Length: 146
Image 1 (cartoon, rainbow, N blue to C red):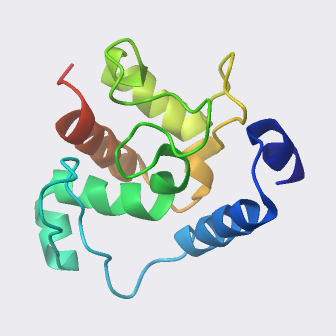
Image 2: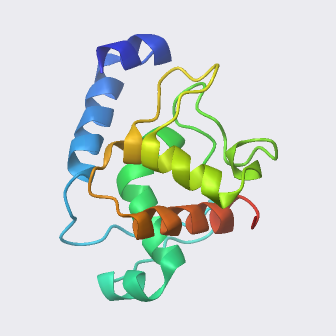
Image 3: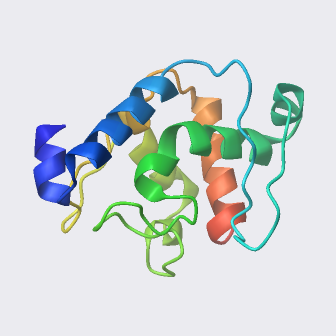
């Protein structure tokens, strides 16, 4: 975390918040958090665990909020300076699904990124199905289908 703090120019409080979030995201939530739509003017929605298993986009949304949002932000534009924006037409979502899934599964470091994305976003519990659901959610919330 120390290197991340320096490279991303984070305050001590931001570092502690991110660390707490990552630790919490590695455990299964007893009650799912509300789903936030990518459109910030829309009202927040709630979902049950049952809904998430029936709807892959909802499942991906839940995983995004539990694992990805600390760095990528609710709007997908990056909560930390230098994190690639999902809203950028030439950004990560310009890649095919297989590339995105591989980046999530194995982690990624690109030039200009202040920190490397850890494998599975730091959540060792993610399955291949979870990763596919996250990519589907990203495409639906922030980008285009590939």
